[in-house]
Length: 507
Image (cartoon, rainbow, N blue to C red; front, side, top):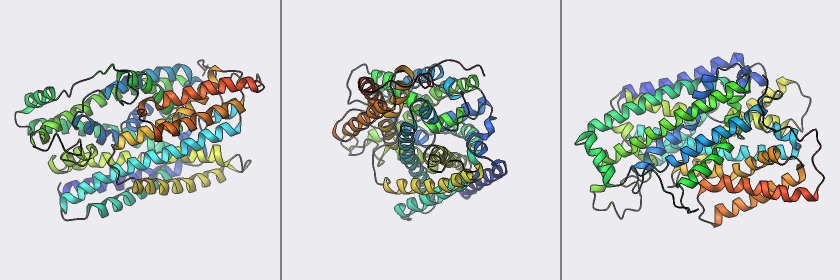
């Protein structure tokens, strides 16, 4: 990388922070701060969903999946489940989001069951999302470290990584603090265009740099079975199989896109359910194309670095040999081999992805679901001030998470999705209970969630079951246990039984 790249990178970072600050004057109420006054166009919401789903973790980790020894296209089996999950959400959940004036998705649980269920689900979201975004922050810091060490090879990479985590974390906090959700969405729209263009340019450059070009890359990919797509084995310990992808991916998407405030908040930025459904389904088609593209970049990188020609390839400890992990492969190419100017723009887009953070969604959940019940009937200005304070606090928490996990060799994508899957199962389960088991009241629903959390913790720490099954197992346990426990309690009042019932709103 050259000086021009540094100018682009830091100029972009400064510009994003200023962009967020410009939105500050529009944040007069909590509805403005959390939902952009419900006036964001559906197509911008669609692009925002794509940018969120294919953020830094995807940009860096997915090419590493195809690059790794034994890596292939079987990750796409999970994406097929993502598409199925979107259809279920459009039919089952989105219509209920527009009944009343919701600020968070967990307020639906309050209406259906009561405050305790809402607070448990909200707390699980806050914990999971801070961990997942801390990992995403770490990935972005790895890229900045690669940028710096390309200029100063003798620099201590560990020190630079820590400094990068803090620098990017502070920029993320400032941007989100001032800009609110509307600024986050519009930055994600810009970010999406930039990193799609950057990824296409990277693919072209990698292909031209391979000795023998495209035909050699395809021959190497075929030799090492990189284009293998389907695995129909039914093995609960394998992460990417057809059944884990279709079933597990469907339930994972139902949880992340249907019951997770981070993404549901984007739907609520529109003014009616049909726009939200259009945004969600459109995002699915774009996401499929992007995942195919990023995996293809991994295949090209495999031929560019040709690790298979090294005598130690087959026995190397790291499957991403000669790199310490798959997350290091694409950043190395971007910072060392892309032309000056273009590499700076791609790195800037990666940084923007880190700042398209969940801090606003976490603050919305913490204020509306965890704080208001104890400090009710305060002026809206009070809650807006608390929202800003919590944005600062959770930003510091995410920086701490990134510092804690920086020595892990496991794929960041794998870490983030496994953590999300662990916690989202019980939450999705209680939404399904509220939708399908009308007689279940709050006590049996809490019992179901508690049983699910206990079992999922056991599965996470004591078994080898792949994370792709976590949400399916966790939500099923919640549903079954709550259904059985409901016979020991009085049924839910009839006034609550239809709160999560599907059906298109008239809006």
